[in-house]
Amino acid sequence: MTPDEAYKNKIGERVTRIVADTLSQGVISEDDAREIAEYVLDNIDKAQTSGQVMDFLTELTAKWPIFDSLLTIELGQAHEQEESAAIEETEKLIKKNKIEEALKVAEQANDEVLKGGKNT
Image 1: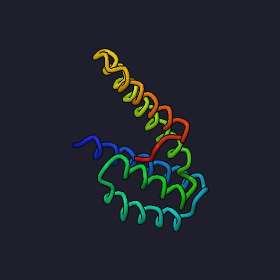
Image 2 (image 1 turned 90 degrees about the horizontal axis):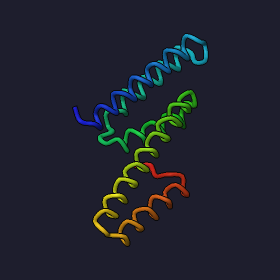
Image 3 (image 1 turned 120 degrees about the vertical axis):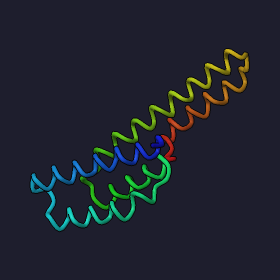
Image 4 (image 1 turned 90 degrees about the vertical axis):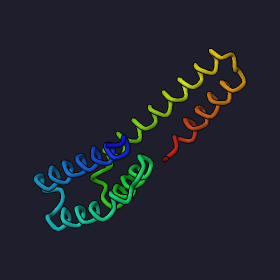
């Protein structure tokens, strides 16, 4: 299983859990749950990358705000991963004495933080 496929499965499980919890709490109706399930089944498999899964989750949340906390958590984790990758790349470049390139990577990462991250 690819990392993207594993991520898609993780999101699918979390979406299912949220639907079940909100249905049992009376937050959504059985009709709502059915509509959400149909939307998920029709759309989640179209996502082939983690970025596309995030796009799916963003669209899902726009339609049904019950997924807002899941989206917030996933966006935060994606941001942390991007930040860690930028730090790692900067450190590698510095060790190779490629200071200009390291500064560019750090500046790009900083720009993404100021923009609020990217959705890829």
